[in-house]
Image (cartoon, rainbow, N blue to C red; front, side):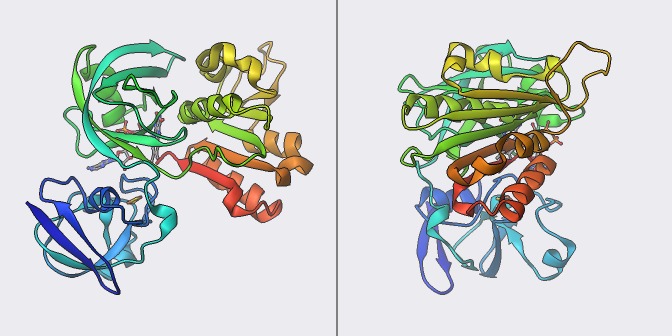
Length: 333
Ligand SMILES: Cc1cc2nc3c(=O)[nH]c(=O)nc-3n(C[C@H](O)[C@H](O)[C@H](O)COP(=O)(O)OP(=O)(O)OC[C@H]3O[C@@H](n4cnc5c(N)ncnc54)[C@H](O)[C@@H]3O)c2cc1C
Ligand code: FES
């Protein structure tokens, strides 16, 4: 059974009655529905319900402001159609999925500690692991409301292997459930791939990658893909972490580090008395010092916490006037 969704102003698509959300149904149907995080944080998937019945999954989602709520706005990633509906939204080609997302069961086959707080989770699922480096999947950890977004840290492969670098967030329900309630051999639902912060293989500019914390997962995937696409590009990596023990890039990339033209680790909370002789402070400041005049000639990828993303947007777009189409990122809400 399906529900018919009509977009006021043109366009109709069908959503399966057992679909998780309006957003995911629209993307599966090939619609360029505006979105970003898929988890209620960014507000980019706002739409108006003109007629029909729509269930709200997470009424308090921070992606809606109080003003949005007063005006009756809804989030497509937190809405599920209960019948045929008419909605108001402005789709755009840039939001179309580059690889059609698909739901599957993912079995945990290995878990490796990368830092005291981060581990790489390896899942096995039926069919090939079809995604573009830099994209994310939606995992449903047991016993928590909603799904959680985690970016793939490996490369697409035919063996159906999906890797994610997950940070255990103090007090976080989903990340702690992944660490503590999913044992080797257990299966959990995975819906993937999603996201637009992916590697643009056809662009032959040098590649600059900036990772903050667990943003190192997708950055390793993008760096690997860029190295494989050489010799056209140089790959420069900046990694921000609190202390030396929290750095993950070198461990994750292994022997492929030899293909990275420059790797700059930057520590924001390393004890003053330690023997660390590398960069200190915030990673965007290190980028500013290290890249400056070369920024305009590069394709820039970054992933990590929202404050880091905002600082980099300000630097790259407002101050260095790098064209927005050369900047690709994921905010980890
Ligand atoms: C695009 C993207 C990619 C990401 N990639 C990574 C990654 O590679 N590695 C990594 O460690 N982290 C990543 N994150 C962050 C990750 O998704 C989680 O936010 C983080 O692990 C904290 O989750 P938690 O459940 O532990 O914390 P909590 O505070 O319990 O939950 C926070 C997250 O859950 C959602 N949420 C909370 N309550 C509900 C509810 N009732 N219903 C529905 N949703 C709810 C929030 O929107 C938020 O995403 C990414 C986030 C995004 C948006
Ligand atoms: S995509 Fe729905 S709030 Fe981010």
